[in-house]
Image (cartoon, rainbow, N blue to C red):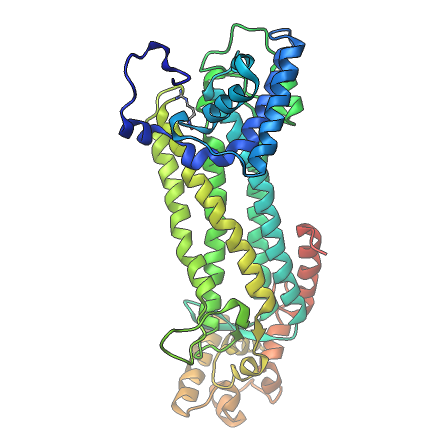
Length: 458
Ligand code: ARG
């Protein structure tokens, strides 16, 4: 018989049972469900709602059940619908009718809310650890390649040379904002819903603060309707994870480009690349491609959750059971993605030789020539036009700006002197950008130190 079977004369239709059950995916909540039940039982006993002996029996029963589940000796039943009723049933088998007292002053509505809060609280800290690990990998690469200059792009057209370290550090700051979002989420989820009952509170003299203390929540929901209906913390989680996946996806895209023969900036380590079953020469960046691809499902879960919530009247509705699979999948997607990206970054080889050649034919020093003319008193707009003509001339001659002889440059602007050739070198171009947050080695070294300090990475 169902735990709620009293008012029913007929059995549930098999398809209805299967359709409404959540045990296939909420079984992973069992450690939280048991821990929450233990705190609830202790509180019921301390408040005199059940006897001390009953409290002890229930708590010991739950602890031995937890040990057996942990040991893989327990199977959950579809007939019991969800993790909460499965655990109550198993407890009853163990300790008898006294198990029926556990659900005093509690509903599955506040129970599932509590379980999800505890689950998300743990997930947040694992995700933050993963983010930090990736930051550490990027910081290490930035430090080990401080001398490497690469073309920087706008519109994916060469713009100005930058330090590769500067590029890596840009991701470190993005990830630092991800950590800030996670810590906001940590505050949102740090609120204890149990004691809301089904929706309106309870007639028993419970002590919600005691449960909050035992489960290490810093506050409790002040409105029982809100406590059982709130899924905002799941939106915060899905948005935070979506943003992380966006960042990982952008980085993935760059690694995919950089490891092409056309770019040739990096080579992925063998352990982090895959081959082709047909083309023997292939070394494919499957991991970044899948990270890029899997970002889609996470964004889908965010939109899915928003959609589940948008028309829901207060308080609990079964629609809310749809809050779980997307959240679980988002977490199961982001954790390995962070780990694999950290591994990919730390093991890839930077092809420094290829990078030194990168500037032989480009015009990424054109801004610097214009700035040079400005320093000689020519208005920037005019300097821009002069350099534009020199670029056009160099293209016609099959060279770049440093390939033009001094006479030609002087014909365009008489103020140009021999020192221009030194200024046009990529090293000079980079070194000249000493503004705070700029790409000069001195500025990047400062940035690196700040990043280490703010990200808590040694
Ligand atoms: N499995 C349910 C869920 O995940 C638990 C709460 C069920 N409450 C109810 N009144 N049917 O939402």
